[in-house]
Amino acid sequence: MASPPLNVVYFAHGRESGPWGIKIKRLARIALSRGFAVESPDYRGIDDPQARVERLLALKPAALDKLVLAGSSMGGYVAAAASQTLDPGGLFLMAPAVLLPGFGRQDIRPRAGVMMAIHGWNDDVIPPENALRFCRAHNIPLHLLTCGHALIEALTMVDALFALFLDEVVRSAQRP
Image (tube, rainbow, N blue to C red):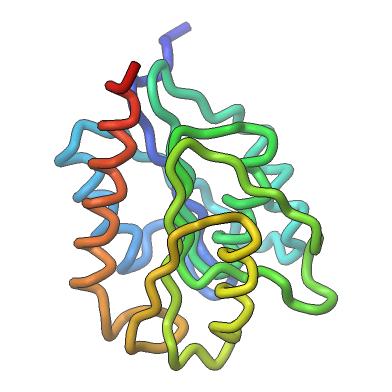
């Protein structure tokens, strides 16, 4: 049995996208350029957010050094919820589907060595106020960008923030 990679990013896509959408492809290139392996499980056909969390946990994501969970929209909920169990080195949330009435658990307590969230001011799917409340409650740095839910209008900034985030994850691994 092969041992897990030294550093790995597990991406969780949103409800309306797939495992290799525009954002994930771009962010995967950044992760690979920094020496991370990349996994992007397919959650299509699984509409229940908690069932997606269970699917991710069943994959037993692991890294010898740093495991990073990254998710967009429903995938942000999945990554945040799974972080409670996996305690990754990093948690990167993009327009996370959190604090939505009737959607998933409301008592998520994300855990990770380094955390960052990005949300669009003009998000008409998940109110930016949800991300603000969630991030404030869990002490997660939040970047609000001038864009909509998919963050497409701000992909260059998303790329830059993800690169900074991964650099911080690596630096945190080097600290005593």
